[in-house]
Length: 242
Image 1 (tube, rainbow, N blue to C red):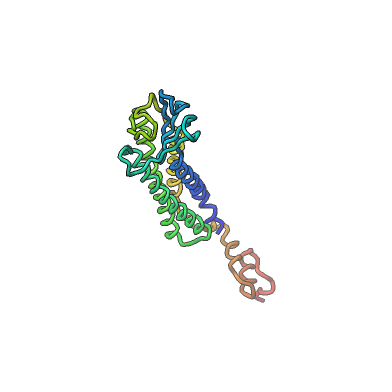
Image 2: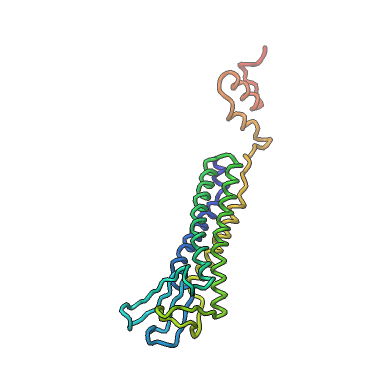
């Protein structure tokens, strides 16, 4: 089944890219630097810099008890903007769908290497590629939404215990959004490579190679000796008629 193994090089690469993209996507759901806020009041936020993520908002302070203060952002909080709420839901959905996509893609590549029925393998690759694209869509929506909110300098009405102003002096796109965009690109390319799979047809011997091909399939014995002699263009003297 060497020709089968050679036919899934691109798909194996797609599996690797999809796994890396999924790891990147899972990592951004836990980072705190989707948005970078610059604040002018440094009475509590001594660095003048705060990081707003999907689940937490953090800043450095030498006034409060801890050097780094982090406050949780919940889906049910009244101040949570819709783009962050959507990110919380869609990132969790993307992680789950990505796990299934990795398992199905790994199963498809393994089946192709082992030479399983072509239709079955083709269906597995289509499912894996589609799941990677769903993962990319679930990641792309919150990433683009939050990036547009940053570029529009939209505010978040944090409660007083967060020590953050409702509007920063300015805000920038954080590394979390950049990693998310890279993750989406890898997942899209991965899905495309998996969807491009075609089950290869066995290579048939050329007309000039027919005798060679038949010899490998023929058994030994009396018949085999006669057929080999005929194929070679010579008649074995032992079987010449008098």
